[in-house]
Image (cartoon, rainbow, N blue to C red; front, side, top):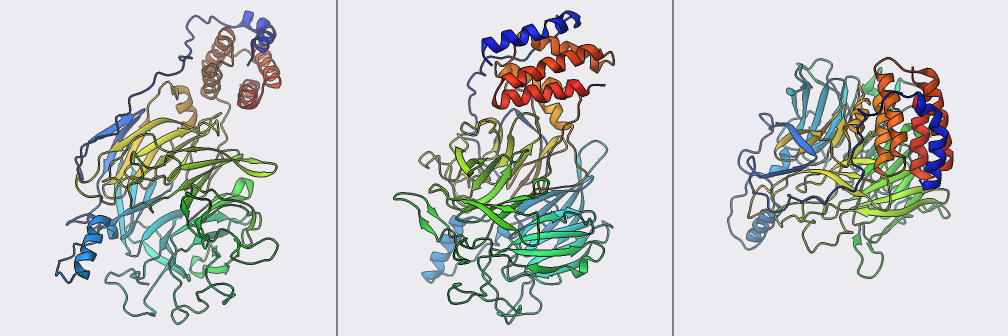
Length: 613
């Protein structure tokens, strides 16, 4: 806001200020730019369960170890050791192979009413929130087959299976032969209404298994649920599942590549779930050629080698806007899902810095998209000092009238060691009104919280990190993801269990902003199905907006204190209707004279005061 605008705003509020209560006890947060912080993540001590830790504006409140039966008792999975063993075997050496710890790796989360479901390559675990707000293990379901991404709807848990060892009966020991009726790869559905007796009620076989999946509600029928399935495995033979075939679409128009699966689930009879469509969402708009997007390779000289677009890795659905964002190997795509069975691609982007478009997040009003790049596949050390900061990073787009336009990129600023697998991975918005804030897992790079309100200049505002598992070898470990849910951050640690963290107020995020985010609660939440946050007209939300206007030097101090004083009276049940109306009108006028995020914050603040009762 300019001084001229401030003066006008001050004049508009003069009458209201005279009527406001004392402002001597109103304290505003610091407005000066926060001092540079010392990054303490580099050089943390190694260890599986006793590694060094570093945190900044985040605090660890609970860390749950792996439940019995989900622990690799003899070692963790290390790509370096695997490669060395493979070479020894090629050289004819008789070397005993250690168990493959990736078989017990934790994967994604889903949130039920009072429970957290954590997927695992070996099955899934359910934790319930106790009376002391602490999580307690409640259920383990062993069902090997990875990668075990989970979603929840009511009493149903949806579970992705992609490895050829997966058995229809969830048994161990794998499956013999090229084709077998015992093999299962696809999306399983479990009924966990009785935690003492969970039941697999459906198992939808797919041609390429299920690496991840996304729940998409029917637009009007609550009895129907759709599942967008992302299969990335090799195509299974038609001798095992009819209709499956591989190959270039030029030679085989029916190839199972270059599509996603749409599964329809009748919720009163989930056993009848079935694939109802396999839309060609990568097709060329003009020719209809199904392999119409990036073919793989370097987009420019000295660019990143980008994967071909043959499948989506993650699809984030945002039903309130009838949109979905697909991170699909070589491209990020935007889908219109107003007809969920027939999603329609409405835009696509590519970038020479991106190796593998992995996952996506909208901001709350769907005006932005943040894509994550999984350079190195999650098993490589990609945050070392000589790694390009644009590779293995987040990339941020604004949605404009002409389509998605690139604005900025973000990669954690710390240097990780050669023993730490590190790359951008799964995350979720923290519902702070007036700001775009994302918490995200970076594997062994830990947990990072960024503010991308300014799309061109995202900044880190909090982190938590542990040292590597070993000082000698890189092991698969670290935070698969980090998600905000009902006031806390839940982060599945691939090798070590489940971490629960809380935000700490700071110069970058005030207690009011955190408290306003805590007002947004859900009985059920799935990480690939985004739900829009709508903040109530509560005093703390008003305070959060004042903090933001003050932090950005957009509001006069006296006026900010007048608003806060009136809000304090409102909070105490002594609100003055005329004063609130006057303030709301004045703030509305300020919104009209402002631009961008400042105008939005003024307008939101005016609306809250106008609704104050």
